[in-house]
View (cartoon, rainbow, N blue to C red):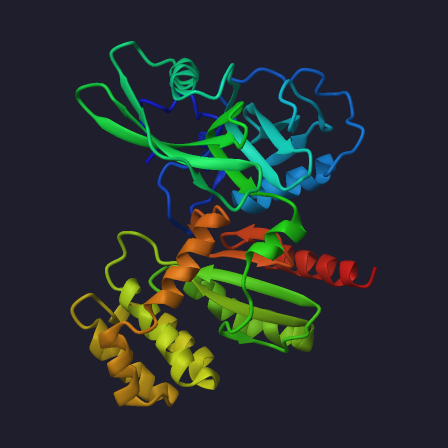
Length: 380
């Protein structure tokens, strides 16, 4: 949950949750809503020489990533120069019919990254300068202690990432801070992958559970939690409507994305990946059975129920039991979790259609339009 100590500084990151419908399972509570205090970007209406995205693309991305419903109107200004050399900048405005809210959004000039939050420039590359900037960005009082952890590589070539800890004597909270590799620009907020081809390069599809032909023109990669009821709804939609309608034009790849706090889904994810390792052809039926029997599964009976469902799906009982007990498939589950983190996934279900993000469970017509657009793009 976003810390009160940091909330003002990263309010732009927290400006998108209020637009959500709630029809999904959150991985991060209190993540985001468009609106709040913001200043308009300098020269925001001056088009950049090379724009990686149109206003329409930015609106599409915001709606898809944050599951903004269609009844919320979104508009983005043309990308323009910013005071930070690596970024272009725009303003995204939301209108729910009662009030309008605006947020500054930054996109790296190469189009790889989408940034919301507080962006700041550093005078030098020292830790002391970073702490000064963070304190100023978050408007923290002098008595608040700040500690910055070690910086590590990220999937984004321009950025390193660390955890910053703030303590005011009564509570201690953490937040992520990103800095450019030259340690001259920092972000207290969120960095997400933006450009579709960059996103596709981050997703592993080889040796993954899937349905549909490997050479299908459209690949839908779904990150789901087996205890998430909205993921179960999406599974039913995929099986009964989407896959029959698009046939061999689409391949669906399934990824484990376990939600913290769910009591039986970690075991189910291990069993699910065990099923794929033991009998790949039985995987789709097994996954469907788990979703269909969510209400009958709990933390006390999860092992027995998963083995019973494995019997129904035609998976070797002894092999499945041994795999669950040894957690032999846990590395596959962990790989899916890490990949989801790298992609900035904060709700399930979240899907990527040829790299385009679709969070939550939008209406059927939205799926059709996205898939039809993806098919059309493959013909160009």
